[in-house]
Amino acid sequence: MNEIIEWDDLSFPERVVLRSKSTKSFLNFTRLWFELIQGDRLLVNWHHRLMASKIDDLIAGRLEPRNLIINIPPGGTKQSSSPFTSRPTSTHWCRKAN
Image (cartoon, rainbow, N blue to C red; front, side):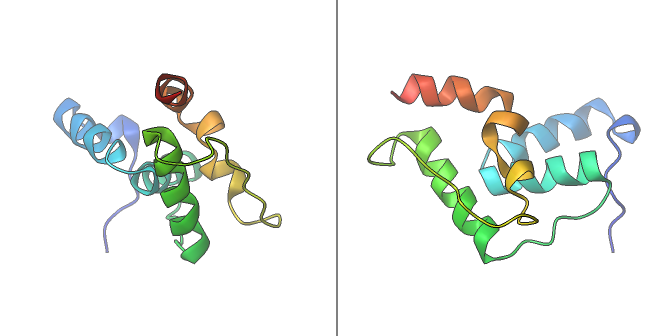
């Protein structure tokens, strides 16, 4: 099993690869972010995939209407998955899409 990612232990090329992976999909970003911040792996469930898919559509401008409400019970990693608290460029991308 792979070790937990520690940002300080990564070389510059490894950081570039992680950045590239994290911008391919929101689920990739959430997995990496969760591991770096929480120090544990995100156990991905169906609702993570659904949220990530909808957020990817929102950022790309494919979601009509252009709004999204995520309503899940506490403990569903809503906060960790929120693009506006975890992914600084998402707000800019959403503005660009509008």
